[in-house]
Image: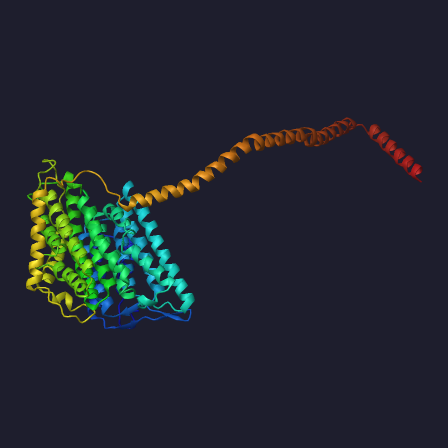
Length: 590
């Protein structure tokens, strides 16, 4: 792949993961910044084309398909990987950095994969590496959540694997090409289902709010950026125009904000908002017009930056205070003013406030839905925008930073400077893209003219944000966070799991009890009788033969000892006696 003029960004991260166990000294962490910098350089300098073709089974595997669609995702992945590595710079655990590096490598591998087989390999690399980012938190809760996360992604991977193998059997190629919505085959639907698992499409989403809040603080920053957005990329690549995705995406957008509004844990609030914000992208892909596709891709780019910033802000609070539960926070505006300010940049970005990047991307998708006469979908996405500002832009910062603190004597852990630097970079990009939209729009794959700063768009955003803020002010004492955890579809999954265990374990337990009874009544008695028979045979048979032989040898030995008198006349008499016996025997036989 490197010999053709394209340095695949995944290679640097894989090399870092392999080298980390052997790095020594105090300055090894500076090596973390090399792969992201190389990735940024590679993405900015590569030209469109196909790189590194590998012959396999009469096909050509293509790990380096570079076009405008892959480049826009690779661009933001490279930037976010650098921000994530800076944010995690203080972490001394090499296993964490290796897992993060392999996770990022998997994302780059998926983005540049031109065939399903290469895509599947990197897809599974992402699943395994990200699971370790959950487990490395090293708590019982994170261990359990990591297992559930891995099982869910294994299921999604099996759908993808089954679909690509059936597809290869039918048409004889692994090429990853767009699917015609009107001519989709059963194997295409299996592949789509596998992609929907990683996109957290409702009801296949519960792994996300279950696992992300239990990951390590910097691990969650990586996870919020790559898994779902890689799924958005493959959906845009292969399944644009599938109307079922438009409906599913709108449901995601509304569903996510509803559950986020009820949550108490800040990282779970942000996790549900990943479901909601990815819903905008999935809906835009499902509508399938150039405007909506550009909006979905632009929103994915913006989302990676502002959602990473939000997770960094909440992670910093968790690092400093030791808790991310809103009922245990409050009064932090005076203690963590810079964190509050940087968090609010992400909060107003995700809420679609003018002059921040969420405004220039979210309005494009909603406008595209309205212009293509999908009015109900556009209304659903607008409703989700209200819930987003309510929960992430107002509720979370209010109860974390401005509300009366639950405890006044909280001692804060010192925050490493690298965490502030990472948040500052992300905040600057969110603002710069908001005031200069062409910074993002020039990367988009389709030539669509769109102007976000129109009087109507500005008035619409101002009205939504103002009335939402006013409503929260009147309801602030009603929607106070309470300790607890909402399971939503997790309840159904656990019910199905427990039912499966019941259906499997009860028959096995019944059969085991029957066998135990039969063994105790019949089998054990038979074994005791066999043991008694073996004991009798040992005494009467084996011992008789062995002991009889021993006794005979002993008696012969005693008789022989008596004959050995030491007198010559006795030996001559014995010789004469033996000779007469032999002579008599010969005479008798003759």
